Length: 65
Image (tube, rainbow, N blue to C red):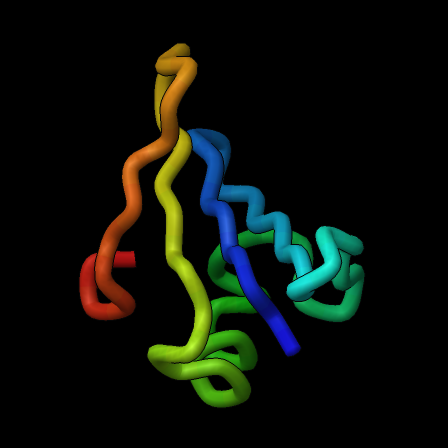
């Protein structure tokens, strides 16, 4: 189902499925979507922090996401 979950510096979350399509039902402010994402996907997704101006995001564990 979900492949990638990205948390940006402004605390917005973007999610993509295995085909690269966005999943709007799991996108929004981190505080609003965090529990739903963690409950529905657990460790099956790639969790990413994309903070600052780095051209490369940091992959993190679910615990640190």
